Amino acid sequence: MDQLLQLFWIFLKVNLLSTSGPASVGLLYHETVGKLVTEAQFVQAVGLSSVLPGSDALQLAMYIGYAVGGIPGGFVALIASILPPTVIILGVTVILSRLRRQAWISNFVDGLAPAISVLMLFTAWKIFEKGGSTGWEAWAIGLVSLAAMASEKIPERIVIIITGVIGAIFLS
Image 1 (cartoon, rainbow, N blue to C red):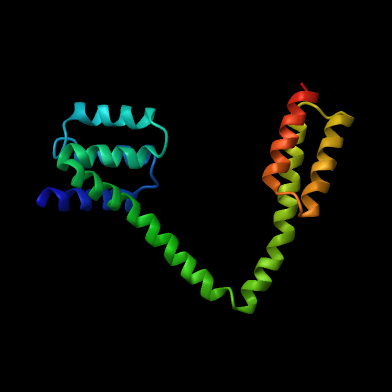
Image 2: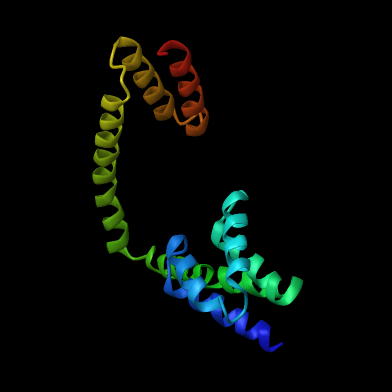
């Protein structure tokens, strides 16, 4: 039971103090090697979590938790890793839900919409310039996809997939 509490505290602390990824691996190394796992076990855990699909941080947590406390240890490490971002997202959602009814928030969002649209337009232009093909075919694909997305009858994902396939066929 003491090991499970120690696992919970370590993974909670690591996930509160880092943004995951390489930063959490370094902090996790400092917190676990020599105390809960050996350096060889940690290196093996990092290697395995890097090869498997999915979140490296969560897989590393489950591996170390399992190495220390078996299946309960894996669950405790996973829960401690998931808890901080989940609580933060829930808190932000509750705050935004309450503020959404405020008039100034609605006006703020209305003011952001044109700025975000222009930002997306400039980003699309940069991608279009660096994409290579700026002939009439590329312009036609761009205009047809813009019209399809503006109609709101065709889902954006479908438009993007179809235009990608058309671009791969005709612009190669």
